[in-house]
Amino acid sequence: MDEDLDRTLDAVGPRLKQLRLRRNITLTDLAEETGISASTLSRLEAGLRRPTLEQMLPLARAHGVTIDELVDAPLTGDPRINLRPIAAGDGATILPLTRRPGGIQAYKFVLPAGDDERVPDLRTHEGYDWVYVLNGTLRLVLGDEDLILRPGEAAEFDTRTPHWFGATSSGPVEFLSLVGRQGERAHVRATPKPEARG
Image 1: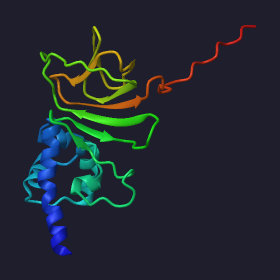
Image 2: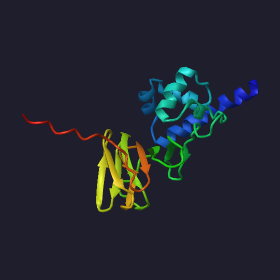
Image 3: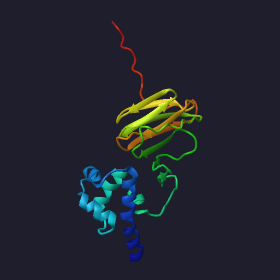
Image 4: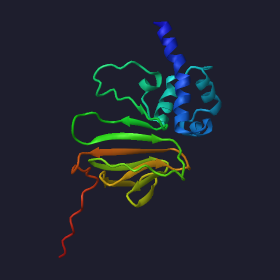
């Protein structure tokens, strides 16, 4: 049992480094996000120090993963609840937030810093998408429009419109995406009734 625990804890350092590099941030950036000194973060990533629970909580939050994912705990219980991040080939991480048949599906995307000169590869598919930027700057190309969305900004569109998402050279971006079947839209606000004039 102790050997398993040792192996699990020894694997945390490389995983922390991989998560940080995937987000394309420095130790100093991560120190500002977590309140953990850059030197301590460096020792954790190098495996020279084992993380405490007090350190793992802000690290998991900063990287957008659970503590189970941070220590690579085995899956238990209902697989629909244990949603694991999906690593894309371009350095992006996609975290499924829902997994149920039908209905609107929710995802969190973490994209590394991009190349502003990149020519987007626009795609189309059936459905409807709503995106909301959490951190960073998102470049959204929708047909002929080239949009820049910042934290707190959202966009919604029919996915039959050619589209592409990417981060800018200013750094990584984190955003939520709600994707529904064709004709199924997210309700983002209620329209207030006009006031009666007397």
